[in-house]
Image (cartoon, rainbow, N blue to C red; front, side, top):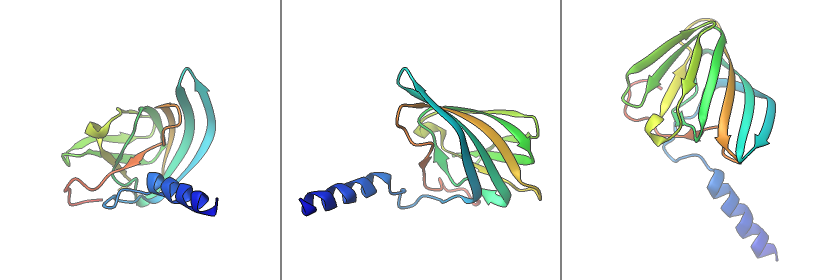
Length: 139
C-alpha cells in the first residue's frame, strides 16, 4: 500500500515538474479572481503583476488568453525572438494556444506591469506550460 502511494506521488511530481531547460519566471505574482468550468472549458480570471525587470519566462498556453494591461508597459516576444508587441496601459492582448506560440512577457520599465487576464483553457489544463529559451539572448 505504501509503495503504491509513493509511486503515485512520484508520478504526480513527474507530471507537474517543469521542463528541464525551462526558463523560470522572475518577479511575477498572480492572483486568481474567479474560475468557472462549463462545457469542458475552464474560464479563469487572474490578475498578474510583473515587477520592474521581471519576466514571465518562456511558455505557452493550451487555450487562448485575453488580457488588458492595467498599468505599466509589457514587452512581448515570440519564439523567433522577434518583438510582437509593446503593450501599454489600456492595451488589449491576445495569446493564441499551442506549442507553436511560445512567448515571453517582460517588464523593461521602472513601474510594475499589471494585467487582467481571462484564460479559456481545456478543463483541468495548467495556466501555462514552461518552455526552454528558444535561443534568444534575453530571458
